[in-house]
Image (cartoon, rainbow, N blue to C red; front, side, top):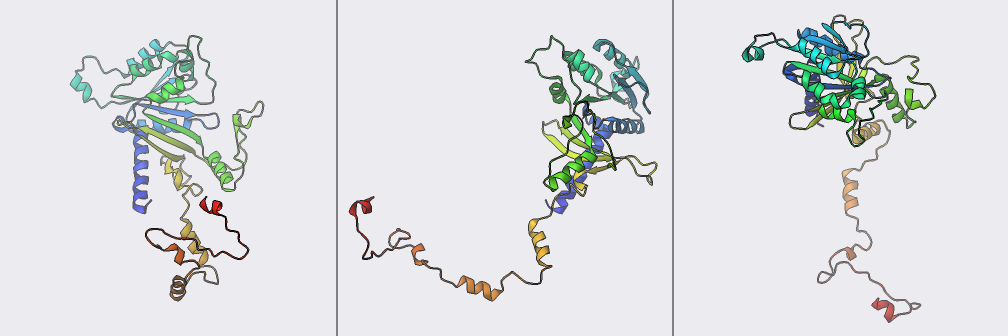
Length: 339
């Protein structure tokens, strides 16, 4: 990729990621975040909430697993134990426009809403058929929904759920307009180092296969930040995929938000240079020259190889022929000659 095209791709990807984080111009009505026990979606959720507050949006936090009200949240709704109808009614009551407002006033209303759901697993396990109803009841032109689904948490489906129906995660991935999959930056770096050394990739947590181990041990220095794999579905149906690094600000950057960068900007994940340029760089350090001069190249072109005449056309389109002179010991056989 040319340097100008690479720079344009980098700038376009970062701007698109920031547009999704800011939820500007209803970039993604339904954003799905997939996390694991090894790397939770907390930092990414906090980034959504902080940017929502800067945009003066009203933040509603629907809690299935969170006990305390998070920072910068305006309305905290406890959803555990409530039915889908009761929950959607309560959420819609906070997002409804004022009474007596005309459609024109509603269209010009600048108040935006950010609805955050900390876990979709309880809802997917209890009432998987009600997921489209739940999303359709609370999403509107003035509200954006950001929901989290835990990938490695077992999902116990009801007995009425048919095996021919799509899995709740498949249904969520189909309805979402943007999907963010978070993972640990430290684990991604260690995996990349193992691949570069042709070693076995390390495994953590449940993938270790050890009895009783849920989360891998965190010892020594670990790179701060998380890797975010973005997949955005455009209105045309085309998907845009890219990987980013979301890292907290350093100690000397107080008052500045999180740092965003492409994963390819990381030294370990940077694309390798062309092999030819590397070879030229290595040849520059040698004390001898393996190249050919102009005289040596012209002399090589003037050499006539053996049997060179057999490669030219002989006769009327016969091409090359094998010339063979029979010796005294050869036995001429007509049958073999015909075959």
